Length: 280
Length: 358
Image 1 (cartoon, chains in turn brown, purple):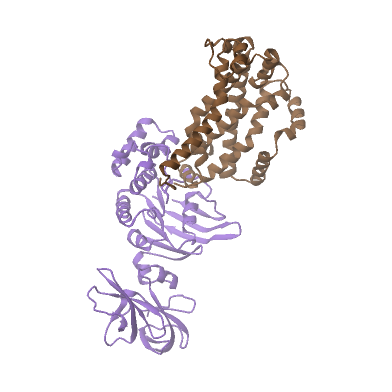
Image 2: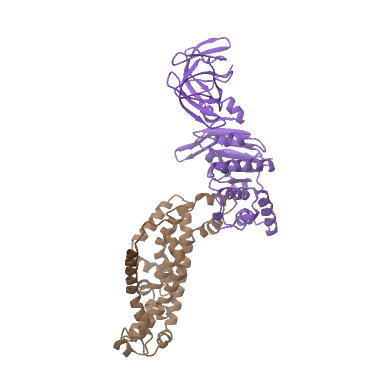
């Protein structure tokens, strides 16, 4: 690709300096959290919050994991997040496929409803949502939270995937029809592989949002055994109050899955954000 | 057997009618080309035969079987698309095998068929490549391979060569002609390129605004166009049209008067005296001759090597194209005397309909 701008060496150095400074700003708090999570006791955190630990200890992670039942919260979060990813990617992609390629009377209205879902925060619809979940008997269950969280993420996912699907040449689907493919086979074997970057983007956004969601589980879950890690963290704060070294360990445990997800999907994620505007 | 019969076919997109009462008989094993300008309905007609578009009214029969309401895959037709429509995520082998795998054919049989097709189209070396790593001509061959692997009765080609460069287009045209000789099937081919139509077709169907203007063999359309549209569309460069009036009719000849009162006598009784008509002359049917009654002032000369074209302005301002031999010696601004080769003048009435040629 041709470069739009050619920077002089001085300009390059300046740009790199700014980027380095920004990286420091982002990484500094995380670095401090990592250092403090490895300190053997609270005293060291207070005495030298930015200093290295006198003894490098991973005990805080073990204490947080076992002592504060982080493993249980972690598993609940993993179940909720992964289920949301599966439901949202499958449902949003099939809905987008039907809306774009098999339009029917009212499909534009349906798409408009999804667009409305993008701009209306789910918290505004909390009261009717609560009644629905309760009448379905899904209050205080992981399934209830999974369904509500999936529904809250569907509009954005449908929006992203319809934009992508519009860029897929219709002739490919015509060719598949001529070859004898049924609508689901066209979706599964022809279209889905072509929108993989968009699916990765949707999956990543869904995972991160579901993993970090605090408000919806707070409303729909009551039993601590069902808590995801976000609610677990708040319980943990009550339990260990000022035990910062343990708190930092807990926070880092909570961060790991989202960092891993970003690392795994970063290439596809960037493709997903940049593709679609330019035809091959 | 693979004859097609289209009866009273109509198609509309909302209020816009794109096919008007199409009636067409396509003979077994023939090569039929739908030709016409953009928006004439030729691709829509092809896609309706394929089953990719729903008809409004009318019927399509393949060997006497009504296929109008059948799914594309059940019609026993296959199609090659303008953009090739190869599945980018699949290799060449997977692309060709795709229709067979959907039909749940046994793996061994699929492999044998893919091998046969790839040998026929010289694709053996490319089988493990993805479409992105193929040239335009190779992609088109793969698309053809995917179409023929199903052994359909009818092949539909939707402007298959329009994305290729000029040289490759000629090469692929020859390959399609060769393919046609090798396969026992009916070919229906859509193009806006009349050279492709003339060189490939047994029968050309000229369409305009969703209506069939004329059906016939390439030379039939060239020599006996039904109207000014067909006359202008078939032949390159296009036919010259000169406004005229019937001056007199004398037995077996008619005298036409051009705007500057130049008189041209043509065989045949053409319309009635004093009627406005259009004289049609193909560039290659003008003959530079000292005794020629037409006089054109040469404005431009294009020397193409094998042939040259002079663009000359007649007295009434009509610019006509004249084909000249390579060693013509014609100069700019020279007045060129022209006559019309015997029996080569066409006369069209005021509605553009061809009048009998005697």
